[in-house]
Image 1 (cartoon, rainbow, N blue to C red):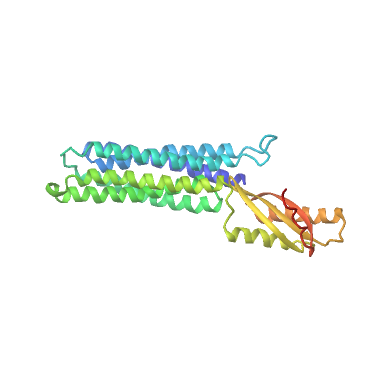
Image 2 (image 1 turned 45 degrees about the horizontal axis):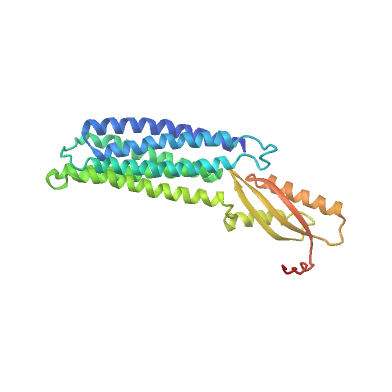
Length: 299
C-alpha cells in the first residue's frame, strides 16, 4: 500500500499549492474589486490549504508500521484526518457567514474584473476534485475523498459567488446586497459539507461494516481456497486505507488441527494477495455441517 499512500500525498500536496494560489488571488482581487462573495470564496480556498495539509500529515503518519501498542497499524490516523477536514470546513463556513453578514451595510458596487479569479477557481477545482475523487476511492482514502468534497464545494461556492456578483453588477440599484448574501450562502454551503464529511468519517471510526459488494469479494475469495467448505460469519473494519477482516471458516469436521490450520493460513494469504485493500485476516475454524451449541441462558 506504500504506492497508494505516496499517490495520496502527491494529490494532497498539489491541492495545497493550487488552493493557496487561488486563495491569494481571490482575496486580493475581491478586496480590490470590493466583492464580498469573492473574498468569502477566497477564504474558503484558504481553508482548503489547511485541509489538504491535514490530509498530507495524516497520510504520512498513517504509513507508520504496526507496533506493540498499535497491532492494527496507524491507519486510523488517516480516518481521523478526514474527520479533522470536516471540522475545519464547518469552522470556516461559520467564519465566512459572519464576514458576509458584517458587510451587509456597505453600499460599494464591486468591479467586474472580480469574475476572473472565480472562473479560474471553478476550472482548476473541477480537475482537482475529479482526480481526488477517483484516486481517493481507488485507494480507499477517507481523508482524500473528504479533500475532494472540499474541492467540489469550491466549484459550488465559486458559481454562487459568480451569480451573486453578476446580479449586483446587472442592476446595482436593486441587487446591491446580492453580493453580500452570496458570501453568506457560500458559508452555509461549506458548513453543510463539513457536517457531511464528519458524518461519513465518523461511521468508519465506529467500525461500520463495508458495503455489500466489498463483503461479497471477501467471501468469494475465501471460498475459493481448497478445503474451505463454507463461510459462517464475516466481518470487516476499516483502518486507514485497508480493512482488517474476521471470518469463521467451515472445514471438514474430521480434519486434523494441523490440516485445518493449513487451510486457514491459505485463506488468509489468498485474501491478502488477491485483495490488496485487506491488511490482515483473523480466521476462526469451525466444523462444517454441525449445529452451533445451544446458548446457555444468563443467570
